[in-house]
Length: 286
Image 1: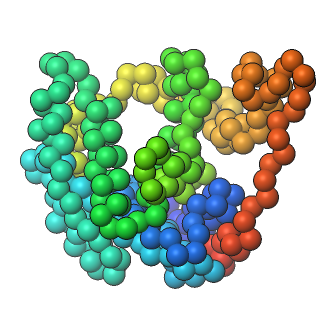
Image 2: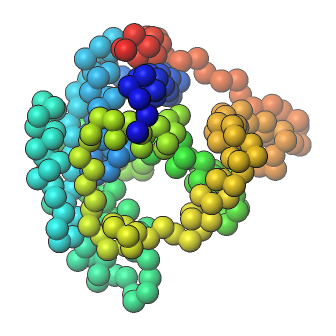
């Protein structure tokens, strides 16, 4: 475990990078009611904590509602999540959606249910957001998730895409935001231990304990990145930066660049004045 000074440095880095993402992508607006998806995992605990600290100091007013979904797997300790959030004073809503039974009905023997489980869980979150009148759903995807998704899509699907930092799904009234896009998984792991967040597993037999399943393609990408980091220590930051530094004329997508007329892409829009102060607010937090 790092010493107190190292943890403080990591904490400041997490706050700064989260504030930067919120500012650059206009994730939070005045009057927002944000559903924070708290799975009980390390990423969602860090997300909830950081957003709650921002709420206390931000130049815009917004609400947070922490929502956890019991997916129906035996042994899931939703009570530990509820107890911790109660102590923090954050508004919360505990939900139940029997994803386990639905997955058992739909998945054939030997199949990996993670994709279906994720879609069902996301649908449950949209339903909760609608019921609670939320304008945003905050998810805990971090830098490594974006990079791994980019490489998975590039290597195995033939699409140059990662995740959307801000997304408005079709037929949904709320936006999805991912404020931890610039935060590394390694910092999240250390900070979770330092803050003693109560990490709770969903108890899916493929995702918890020693038998934890990771899709073999994603496992390959993780292993590849670890190997590359040994030779290129800053490779993850470089890959993530490339997602925001696209040269349309040097790709092959005719929807991005008009090759027939050699027209460049439209200029970037300026950020909203409402969010311009959020980054400086985060810098003064520690």
